[in-house]
Image 1 (cartoon, rainbow, N blue to C red):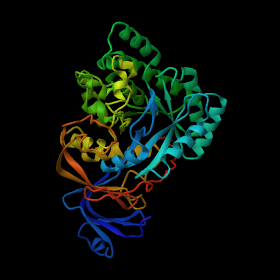
Image 2 (cartoon, rainbow, N blue to C red):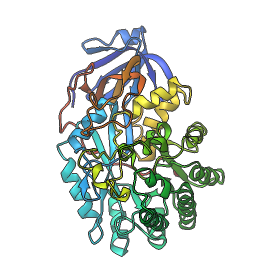
Image 3 (tube, helix red, strand yellow):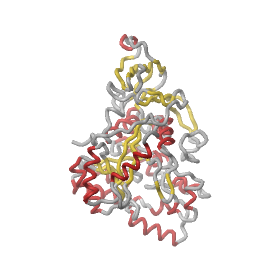
Length: 468
């Protein structure tokens, strides 16, 4: 806890609801007050450490609701630890992550959650919470879901993909959704028809189609749309809310839009990779396309306009990263000669806030919408608002001083994620994080890391704040 009073002076405070030239007073790790810059009230805030935000934005720290630190996948592990991953998050202006604890088949939810607590405890530079991946639905699992909701793990992810690993069939999904309808939990769905995809994978490999680009071709947009439709209908039968992760295809987005038009409690997330990258990247020669293998896969460029439109119309509410980095050398290379063996995942936790600011510069979204989809809505969706996701009296002082005019070129040579490539190598961006406070403590100070492992604390969450 910071005993120091801090005042951030002269910036444009941007939240999801408002923009105002205001000074921000922080005490004991929380926002105490805002007052118009130059006002008598602001002038009375003396005896404080002062941070100058003139010509800068003062924004809430980002909330990334979808990361995978140290995640086991395909015989290897995601390259970022909780220490390196949360440090990179801070560099990118993200001050809270929600990671996924994993229940392995044959084990309890509790064992999975305990294992993830052990990985993260004392390691994180910024605050963190957990979702629970449910891989083995039976009576005991369902009882455990109730207990976890009571402990602040209020969202449960299921997979319609990855048979033999995380896959749940429709009956298991329905049972978990029914339980969530009773206990207030939120079901998060990886919506792809994994059974059909596996057939297409085997057929492609049999034809000698082994390059990374075939990863995108077999994981068809129609099979994302079909699974999204099925998940929505199962949730409707169960009377449960549904959050569809990493929506990449316009056909899947259309299913979400239709459900929302019917008034169903259905929500959708997309990720920067689907907004800025495409199958052109998967087709890069000399196995370079492996860098862009993730699931759901990158889509042809014409899907991007639909996703941006979905963010403007609120058919998509959240942009998270699905940060799950694997090094090109030694990890992605496991799939040379067989695209199905390329570890699925991309780095991005450090890039999200900057890429979305570029979207403001490019006219895709407004400044306030940037903060809404990156900070406020994920905080509300996962039961952390207004502690997280806004700048208001009583909120945690998770605050970013952001320079909207600074220019940068994204590169693996300068990023802080523990991975040997950047998905956005050479991309020029306008806007950059300058200083980051986590609960009032400076984690990044004028482009220097001043945080520490263990500052970040576990954050139990309430239930989804968009439900009655």
